[in-house]
Image (cartoon, rainbow, N blue to C red; front, side, top):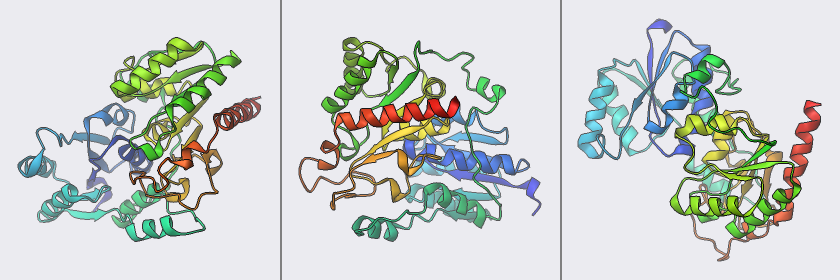
Length: 354
């Protein structure tokens, strides 16, 4: 089959952080194979970021909570995909929904490959006394395309690599420009085992605010999160909440891209900042940065964690209840430690640019 005739569907229907992790791989392969058409099948929130990618990448929205919900909805989505006449399927999700889709598509002659999550290796990693670097998910995704016969080198830098692509996000000007050198702070995550205690994070914000020479931009989405962020913004100088101020991931990325640094949990914001090539200091509690889910291009040295606890990591994704009852993996990281790491990282960035 000639390469220019190929049309590859990329399946990833999951939550924000998981979808964001696929983008450096999709961007790399799309640029390296400009005559191949790639169609991402994913959630609607990713559209502004797909619009930033090479022109041979397109999006089909999988409305898994609406039109494509349930068995009948999944079959409706499958008919939509068959109408695109794909030649290949790269399943980067490998869950029940995508297994059904790839089975149906394969019955029509479409070649399929899926990601190898190696769940056994994940379980062994959690139990191991000495942690060794696991295969990053980016490489696992890239291997799916290699098995489809496409060479790929992960050479991604940033989604905002041309002004033309930047304009395609419908953001002619960033919706917010910080007055001082800015640090983005995203203090929340999906699970308690991945979330630094709010009262301790407030101490970090307070100490950084006292410096007077940086602005902190706070990111969070839920109603309770917004309440916390807005209270901090009202209480401390040089602190601005981005909650309810931004319209979609394109605008959020455009603001994060202006920051010198991000402080985040093991969360979607770590991956979003990585797409803008912003250095990320990430806090790791119940999960572990060597488990394969570190932000793209972020070195292990930027992970903030306790390495003296035998109980961590307790799970791959941080959803397991704490065996100690109070998450010492997070409570044992002092706010002053985090502030010092931020100050050191900012100094290093300034020196590298001098």
